[in-house]
Amino acid sequence: MLEGLPKLHLYTGDGKGKTTAAVGQAIRAASHEKKVLFLYFNKKNTPEGESKLLSQCGIKTHFFASEHPSSPGGLSLSVMRKETLKGIKKALTALKESDYFMIVMDEILISLRDSIINKEDLEPLLKLSCPSPVYLIMTGRGAPEWLIERAELVSSIEEIKHPFTKGKKCCPGIEY
Image (tube, rainbow, N blue to C red):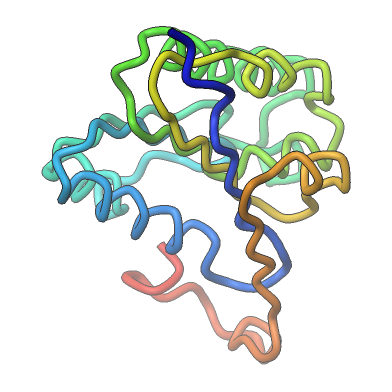
């Protein structure tokens, strides 16, 4: 018997905390012995990042398209698209396996916003009927209206004040 479509949750907006919210959700699910997959997009895998802790909690992590084309030394658009599509395929395979409770696609919305991927690339994830409830969490700036309408939950994180605007550098344990 088919349970239905994935339950889509979006964390978007220009404020800090989208990934932090997704990490919190993933840890909460894992604490209930739920199987979680955390897919990173547009980020490098660093030894001091939260992926280490997620792995210790039994959450599988994978990194795709690690250097946005706008970053110094970033990937070309074609390589970025290829890597992002690999991550989408990984998420689709996990949805088909049906033993995941939650799949997080961190910063995937940046790839959508910047036209590295398009609506048609994400549609298979959103239309796949799952035999058990699956939460699909997507984070990043610039969630499009069509995706917001499709989502069950949307949180927009607004920046009111941030040390970056005063020239402060990233702080380990806060920004990464």
